Image (cartoon, rainbow, N blue to C red; front, side):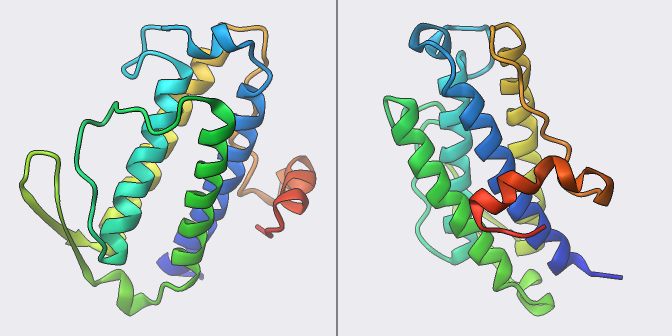
Length: 180
């Protein structure tokens, strides 16, 4: 039975794949629809994609022992989808590399960072990564729902882990150069 290390490796690859599918769908939207305030917590599809990247970077830095950039969780990192997509791919690849380097021992290492209120936080890396993956899934679900109100069909994001779904993800994984 594979352990937690292998689970996090699979989740990192799943995150790369899910973001790839979601950004590709969002690229089909007219600019006005992409930026439209849809009543979500981060207002628009753009605002929510931006938030995902911001938080990914934040926790990647915390886990890597680097300085975490504090500030508002809704600040805009990039003004357009192509720039945001390119930056998300970089963050996704960093997450995959980080998880590929994990060991059972490194999962127990305590990550320390300062949050946006100036408070010191510390949790084992396995807890931080679990939180990061749940955070991503939560907000991708919001974007999926927002896409439902447009002419663009929301992509399937749950065809990653089961062997039965392998043919449905095969082309994307080949394009991304990753295996399951």
